[in-house]
Image (tube, rainbow, N blue to C red; front, side, top):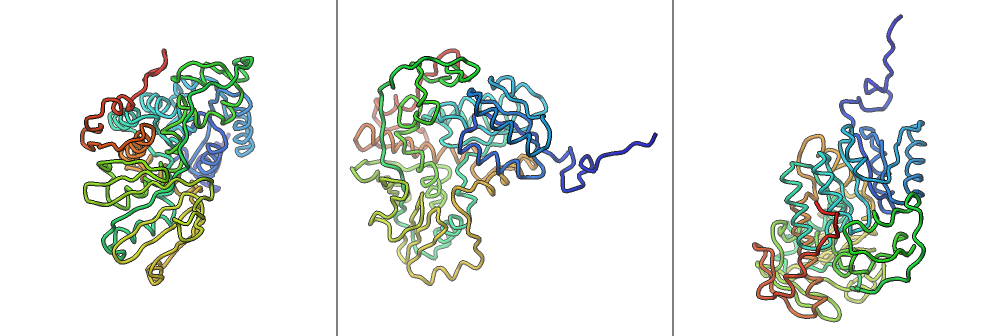
Length: 412
């Protein structure tokens, strides 16, 4: 009898040939991770095959989504990430757990031979960011931090203007952040669920033990020191400080000093450029008078001797002088929260083994800058920082905060 080869096996009918497909798994998928995953599996060269989540309802929801897309029941749900990472057919993983699992999950994935797209913040401490970068480079893995605004056109245009000299010499950069907060209390203890419904021990992972409360696993972990990163500063500043680092051509360094005030944290680079991390009180806090107009969430502003530019997630661009906008010849509006171009950049680099836009080294320095700023805020004092040694100068207490112990047996 003649052999019939399905068109999809040859890369026809709008599909990629098996040799060109990236086989993907995902670990810890909530609302933000769901958006990332939808961007990834929309690409024709991605085959999504496995979901791991400690909450049964979440892993089932993702499996149902994948099975509906592919018209089969092939997506395998796991409660234990080690079972997913042990699969030799999986090329890459999306990690979108709570912040406290990002570093360890990424490191374990890299050691298992997987490339990694990790939601931000990628580490709870300076030490975790260092370990993550070191591991990715040691194992030659492709890594993309979920700071997707580097691949959004209006932010790219702002960076272009800042680096082109058209604003004159840059002297001040503004990066927005939520107003910091940190808490050390425990929520009231509640009956611990069956592990198959919600594996509380695995959800805690490397974090210190505390009793179960459903609010934690529903997103209420934010702001709690044991689970959150940098007094919530990195929730936005992981994006906005990252853009300022790029604008200042400072992807391989950090500011030298950080000084907190009630309204902001002011930092200074070796080249004299000032970075102001502005505290905004709500998601649309850029209506604050310190910003000239409404530009959406995560606004940044670059000021030079001859002009300035401000932009945010709305896609709006405000410049002074107005004539600077004429430089923009082609502009496709795209929300800063849209990860489609960023996930595509990751997939292309998985194939070519190139550096992503937000590779582990870029992440390392931008995250360390954020953590140093958060440490200054938590200690409520000005801190000097050595970008080469990646440590605070003559401040033992601040340097102890660069690391946290991991609860046994969770370690890299």
